[in-house]
Amino acid sequence: MTDAISLLVSCTEYYAYLKNIAGNHVYLSLEKNELVKTLLQTQAQFPSMDLDFYMGLLDGLLAMESDATENAYAAYKARTELVIDVVNRIAKAHHMEAAEACQMYYNSRVAEAVSEDRTGYYQKSADEIFALLEQA
Image (tube, rainbow, N blue to C red; front, side, top):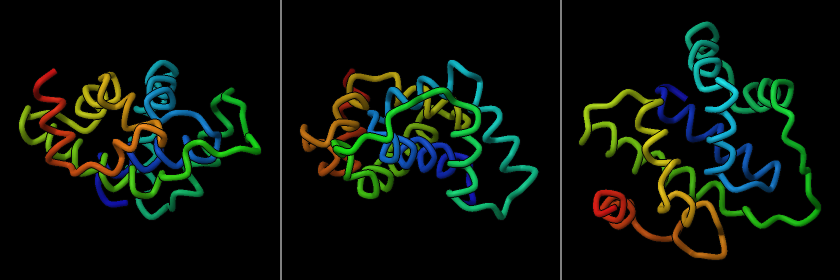
């Protein structure tokens, strides 16, 4: 993970997958617990760490529980790629930093729909998702 948007989205979506919690809820929890700053600061201090390192960090800091036996968020890899693209577009279009762009995305109704596998929104193109966000 070389950039801040990739870090924040990858951590959010992978944690959502591991804990079986919708990605928008995970990001809101990260934000509420001021862990967005922590992730970005950690990336600056340890730029070569992998996603598993960040999952351990988050697991140690968050009280989110649900290593569920069922998995309603299995499409996290496809969703992660899509959301990174969409959030990069938001950042560029609105001249935002990574955390601001993630906040704009994850606080939207569109992110809520994309976060749920059953809606199929994660299968839409980045163009479609970005257009939906801009219309809202």
